[in-house]
Image (cartoon, rainbow, N blue to C red):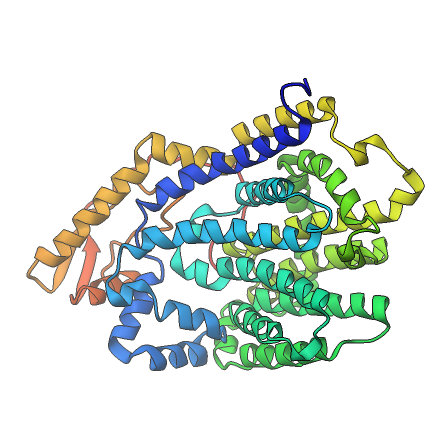
Length: 490
């Protein structure tokens, strides 16, 4: 079979094909995307009334200290009446996500991996992450969710790549890359409290690696740690945090939060491991990990750490991320936060796997499974990936929203609403409910009560005093995906 195509080339086409499998419907769906009824119009309407700066300060003082999130949502395309941007930004986010994975693996393996191998790895990991997103809509198509959670995924991938490049140059605190690192840290921490924890954990882990490798901390890393502390202080000291956290009687209960996080995590991560493509992709990653830990690779130093310490740090971070949501608001993590948890799970899994390959490579020796791809293994992985892709909820959901016309019906209904809001002369507008609510695109519809917050924001944005739905809803023709019970809102 090697006469026609080598295993390496086959894997390249297999993994890039997997990425295309999920990317094509995501790009297609972007052309049916619209600003979300949930929050998007409220931020825009607030800016219309109070201006950009005052709106950010009101939100900082009255709800959350997420300064970068506040900036992004209060400068959204809705403020400029640019509805077409809601087609553009999901596509750009998808491209940036893949580029981030590619940048990271390129910095780690530029000395030992070919460009085609780097592309294949980035494609495979990107495919894995997208298929395990807890909510496609909240990651790609909801502008408010993108501002607080999705963008930081991309920023962290680029930041780690810059860290590696900076370390390779040996230019210390005098490098211009230090300013770029500081900028990424600023926006990542300012995205959400979840990302603040992830960022501080990454910096702490880098400091640990530096102490193990060099027995000292570089000045540049010390500067970034202090800078991250200042950014974190700006997030946690915001007056609005106390207001948001006071809404649930079970919030800040440590024992309750720890027990619930442990019970939740045991079920959730078990399902992630055995119901995702991470195990077959790990088989394909073993030869890559073997080369990444080769003595010829300058980046080998990043994996020169005790395996059990790495595993403990990895599992501990996953636990903390789920624990903090229980502690803050007393309910299980919402979908947008689980998108971040899954990101940490994917990146941390392959890092930990590489660390253990480094540890055992001397004991195992030149094991063929680690040295090169074998056709029997490749074919088994192909079958498993095909089966996983066919059964995956996100793949089926995106294609079915297109195949059954749900996305197109939603798009037409929203366009009709815009026309109705512009043509109606009265102060209060009665709107028909959406005929469908495609789960891959939309989060919610307006309420039948004109006094509802989302109705008020929608009406105000279109210079009306009120808006409401005027008849009973048509049952949405949407599939019911089977997930563990997760609360939708904090």
